[in-house]
Image 1 (spheres, rainbow, N blue to C red):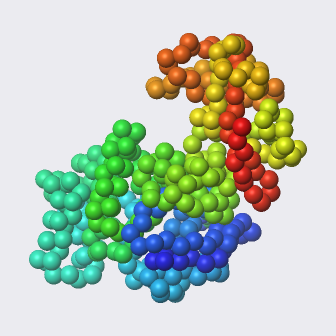
Image 2 (cartoon, rainbow, N blue to C red; image 1 turned 135 degrees about the horizontal axis):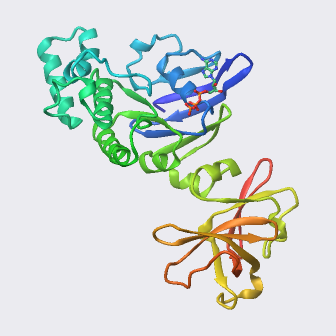
Image 3 (cartoon, rainbow, N blue to C red; image 1 turned 90 degrees about the vertical axis):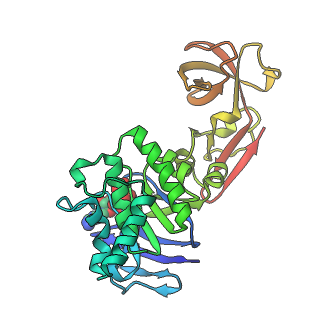
Length: 341
Ligand code: ATP
């Protein structure tokens, strides 16, 4: 493993912002650190960067324990949300900053900055100041500045947070392509699941100071280990009493389950081929999703989501429907399991 973190604990007062976190990351991977606000994402990043030290636990980078290595000697580049550009410096000087600190020669600095300006699509903007740039351009400068000293690891804390939705989408596609081209190991923090799924090779879900799950987006989507994770990646509805549903009677009281809408089939009365196996439901709400309808349907005291093809008769609130549930993710204290009907 290129990065190995073992039993990392960091408390603020009595609160464990990092509560015994362990993980490994292979070289060249692009990792999304995802979780709710206050979950402990930034705390992990700061400890990796050397800006905070853990109360206990070890951090290894490339086989070397770095706990006692100061931030500037860890070979890490970072772009933090509040790590603004130097306002009184041009784009060129901002990017050159780390190289100047390292006392590289003028010609070497020029070659490297030119290369980065090229790579980050900032050609022609090198003499501008940060306040003469768009948000997306500023973020590219921050990225180029972090990459300039050729770090081995790149840490990005909500790199797109301050950027509007459309530019943000473009920028993240660009970032993914650029990082893959360079091949640098990268960890980026986000609380946006769409962003994590779209950009990352692997996702780590952090909440309440704990690492809830780590895996590829598809693996986490298909095999969530907790209702919390299932709720964080992809659409899902939670059920408190899955044993009350037709076809799932063997599920014990007290278990929890989640349903993904793609495993739910709904039809008007008489529309489904096997109505006897279906639950009776009432439509509560219908949303247009672009490629389908999303239908909120109440079964007994619980409401779940289903998709309905645009080709079928539309449904409306108040309609009686049949609901066939094909798959549930069932959770008890320690295990998760897929139950199929
Ligand atoms: P966000 O998405 O809001 O940035 P996060 O997942 O990055 O959240 P952290 O910034 O790591 O979360 O914070 C985790 C917890 O630790 C929070 O409850 C936060 O209030 C607390 N915390 C972080 N830094 C400090 C500090 N310097 N002093 C006291 N508490 C802190």
